[in-house]
Image (cartoon, rainbow, N blue to C red; front, side):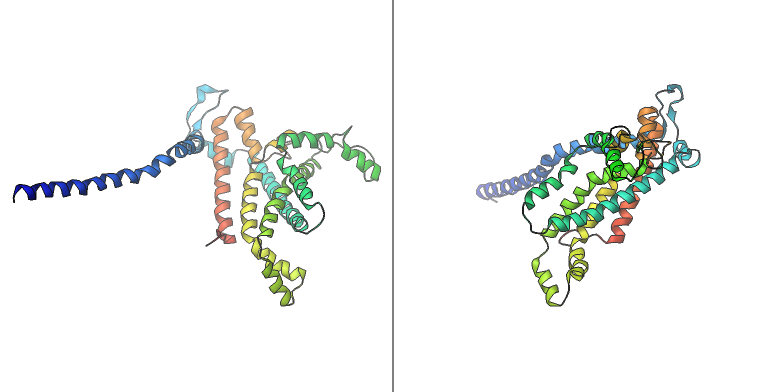
Amino acid sequence: MNLRQELDVQIVSTQNQKPTKKVKIEKWIPYFFILPSTLMIVTFLFYPIGTVFYYSLQNYDVSAPFYNGFAGLDNFKKIFTDDKLFLPSLLNTLKWVVSQVGLQLVFGLAAALLLNQKFRFRGIVRAAAFVPWAISGVLASVMWSLMYNEHMGVINDLLMKLGIISENKAWLADSGTAFIAVIIAELWRGIPFFAITLLASLQSIPEELYEAAKVDGAGRIKSFWHVTLPQLKNTIVLTTLLRVIWEFNNVDLLFNLTGGGPAHSTTTLTMYIAEQAVHGSNFGYGSALTVVAFGILFIFAAVYLRITRYEREGN
């Protein structure tokens, strides 16, 4: 091999190496772009979750630091065997979630069907219907606490004028009416969520489907059952799941209206967690309760999506 051939071989080998290095660098470029968001997720999501699981295995009571240390499964054993308020709070949570999500879905669907009709000032009415959802939980709870006030509340005043009650009632201080009172307050705030999301889904249903159903002799009721509901299935499944999670973790309105009382009649599991961890300074036991709540929601979400056979658009 002469000198000319050796130079050609070196040039070809050099040219073949450069693209390989370039390809390796380009392969890692997308990961550099997602690195900041990944660090944010790890810092503000996975790290707190990991911390909760860690403290659930610890005795971490600020009021009794000399007992702090590794506890193993003792916190979980106490929850299921010795804690007398865990099961009542879990049952209150079940009643709260079922009543809230079920009623919000029914009334929200009815409101969406009405708002989907053509009438004057429809845009203004739609915007006004969304206002309760935009109000913060604390502000809504202050407003409803004033309305439920025993001495100057507008609810007592209206019911007295209508002759439904003969004397003022302390709606939030009576164990027989407190739970119903907070359900009504949360319904007012939660119905617009279903109304707006279902309205958006209603507007995406092709008009040709209703025309075909009409040609086949279907009336409004049959069109609703065989056209509208099947088209709303994925939206209903997803929004219901989200609302179950949100209502399960609802604290602000319940805490500000009743504080869990009277006699723990409105204490949900999330409020009980806050009571143990924040007010009782028992972060280890509160973390264990949080892990139990997380497990309940995780199992529910998996089973719910499996039963409803939820599918993303395009699948």
